[in-house]
Structures are given as structure tokens and as C-alpha cells.
Length: 267
Image (cartoon, rainbow, N blue to C red; front, side, top):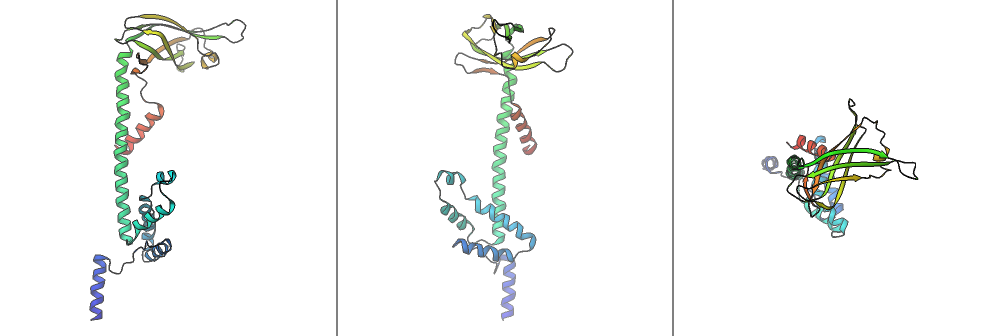
């Protein structure tokens, strides 16, 4: 009869974990002892998997933000961790950890896809803006260094002639200036600059500007030959409310790298 009961229990153990040790979350000491007991019944390969799963499950309920803000105490967090593990077998802990990882991965992918969509939308918007920015014409651009009275440093000067061909009043214009020489692949200087237009520039209006960048900036340090050319690209225009009407700058280098990384990983 005893042998028969043993066979029944052994069969049940295979199907339902009869006699399989469980974690005891009644106290930290009890949990530590039960972890050692449960781990000792596992094969060597499973022990590492169990230990990793323990950490995943235990910390899944911990709110680090609440701890930092004092909204949750360390004792409260420990109690939550013990409660989450209490009564679970090794198999249940491993399965629970796998479920948590899968849910976390799904959330991360969802967030990544949203970020990809946002970055791609910025790229598309920048491309659309280029057509409008082309209507803000730069008919003349010149850069030179001018002598200053009582100063050993020369003053950098940017001269521009522009016309607002858009349908909007413009309060501020942003440019990318390039100083380069014919036949040279590397420019002497590539620099962004902008100008707040006093009184704005209405549709159809034209103006000529003489801008004086900071002489101690890169503009004042450039040493380009006389045959160097100064070209200007319009990259953004602000409306009367000082907000961007059209912005073709697109993604920064870090954003472009981020987009590439996310697409490789999640698409």
C-alpha cells in the first residue's frame, strides 16, 4: 500500500509538483532559507536561471521612483518583494520572470516604434519645409574681415540681400553659412547663424543686411584665401509669434544615430 501511494505521489509530482519546495515570504530570513532549499533541489544549470528569475520577479514590483521620492519605504518595498515570491516554486518563479520579460520587451518595442515614428515624422517635415524655405531668396551673400579702429583684430562681416517670397511675415531667419574655395573638398568654415529682423519682413519685401558676428568666434578666426566663396542656405524661418514656420534642419546627429539604432533593433 505504501509503495502504491509513493507511485501516486511520484506521478503527481511530475504533473503538479508534489513535494516541490516553495519559497517562504513570511520574513527575510525565511525567504533566504527557502531560496537555498529550493535552489539545492535544482540542477546546476537551472540554479543560475532560478537566481536570475528571482531578481526579475522580486524587483518587478519595486518602484525606484517612489523610493527616491520617499513615497515608498525600503521596508515596504521589501515586504512587497517577499509577498510577490511567497509560495512560488522554482518553476513558477522562472515562468513568472519569463512573463515579466516578455511584457517588458513588448512595452519597450511599442515605445521604440512610437519614437521611430516621431523621428521619421520630423525628417519628413524637414523635407517638406525645404520647398517653402526656397522661396526666401538669398540673392547676395558675402563674407569678409574688416579692419577695426584701435583694434588689432579684424571684424567679421556677413552681408546678405534677401527677399521674402513666402506668404508669411518673417520675424527671424536662420542660415547655414559655408566658406569654401573652388577645387577644395573641405570648406574653410561651416557655421550656423541667425538674424532677428527688426519690424519683420512682410511677403514680397526685400532687405539688405550687414551682420557682424562675434570677432572672437569661429567667424573671426577663419583664414580663407581671397578666392573663397561664401554660400548661404536658409534652414528655418520664424513667423510673427517667434515660432518656427518652416524648419529644414531635420534630425541632429544624435537623433539620426538613435533612429538608425532603433530601426535596426526593432524593425
